Length: 479
Image (cartoon, rainbow, N blue to C red; front, top):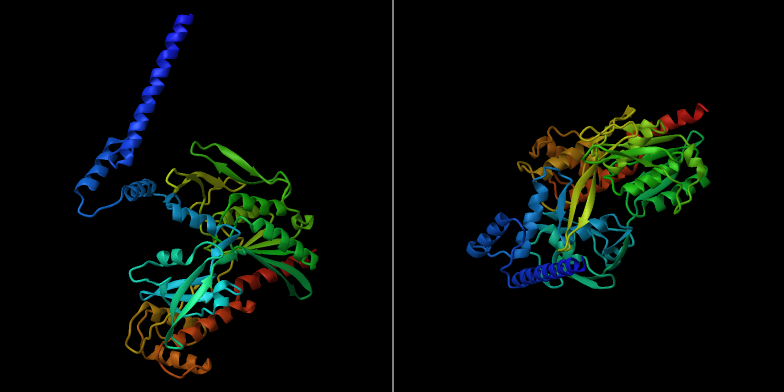
């Protein structure tokens, strides 16, 4: 018996030593650029052909990243994707409580990189950047041939470091060099206020994303609303694309009794796991929240975690859903970190409502459908080009739509600049007290942007919110 054990031990040592030598040899070959990239011969064959015979040289790391992206793409699921190291960092940052940068929105227009608007109190505002400033250089390097993502990546950096931008300012017709020190930019996802309607105090709370700090913001906002006398709650998740499932669980737990199933997770084999509200150890929610009448406002941009919340409130008859049918994303993604610093984001579960409904591709239906005015769904952009009678462009169609939404008569909205468009442009410019003309230029688009933003800021124009307030006032009077 002892001899057999000794022979077994010797064999095991030899096998381990052989395995070590094989792995060491593979590692050495990879360092020399001649090793295999996978255990699948066909992938290695393709890799060798591209490297040895391709006219265009490509680094092996980029080829491997391309293969990883291709594996995710072939699944045919828009929510399963490969993220490079940079993309993975950006994804994490989008859901973080703060991000490092200069606090300015940048867009690309006609090949130019334009500052849309600096955030209030941000480094970019303090440095004096203004809307319509064109970024020409970053740290002395021109931006010719760069993508918007390239420019954003160059602007970002470590907190406390400075990025120097050369900008062209149209109003001054000159170039300026503007140094901006990068800093932490707080990402606020919750805003709230008390609205009064005929003697009733109604709490309004907007959730733009279910991010890392959203539950903490929700705790602070709802406690403040209740302390100010709010007796009911309107939750606005219009345009909310989702976020972390644990965050929506925390928020749902503040509205529902403990041990309530607010959703189910279903794995690839069909097994269901209930998601249950629990007593929070991190947050102290006012117990009045669990008894307050609730209306949830949603639109076609409300997706994923937003739909988990609306689906739970609807199925459990805890809230009244208003607006329009939501987006319809009923899958949950797990993120796996890979050895190259990238991540594989993969749909691994379906989520179901408390009544075990799968809303994927269908969305959460409203209890009361309320259409919204077209101006609220229009993406406001900066336009620096000039258009006149006879021109045809998407920016002209954009201007036509906004003019129509503001009450000006425009004969068409297809992007062709005709006489009726010229008359509407002239009337708008006169009413806005800007230089009278019949052309769409930077002055016109700036004034148009301001008028549309003022229109949307006026709560009286928000038909969905007004309907929610009216419904809630009626509901509170029933008591």
